[in-house]
Image (cartoon, rainbow, N blue to C red):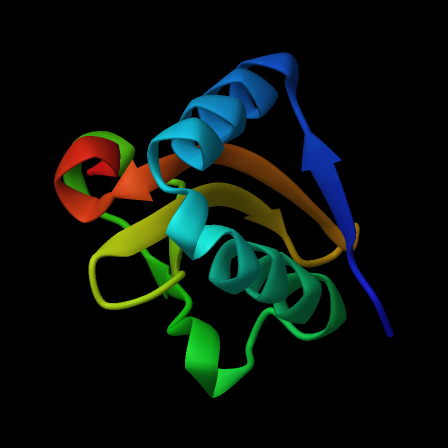
Length: 91
């Protein structure tokens, strides 16, 4: 049971900027996306809903400092990637 990751144009720009800025995190980032596609509820991702101005979005962890924010449509098996970066930048 896999989910479809949706890469919007704005997300792709943010991801490219993230990759240029943090090449040392690329393998962790790619692993996070693979796990997210296979099982978004995997404990390593620490999937959780966001509140406040980001209500309606979810977040998963790349590592202790970096996150991916996303829209998670459980019934449609789609995950729309919104932002990637340091937790201070994406929250």
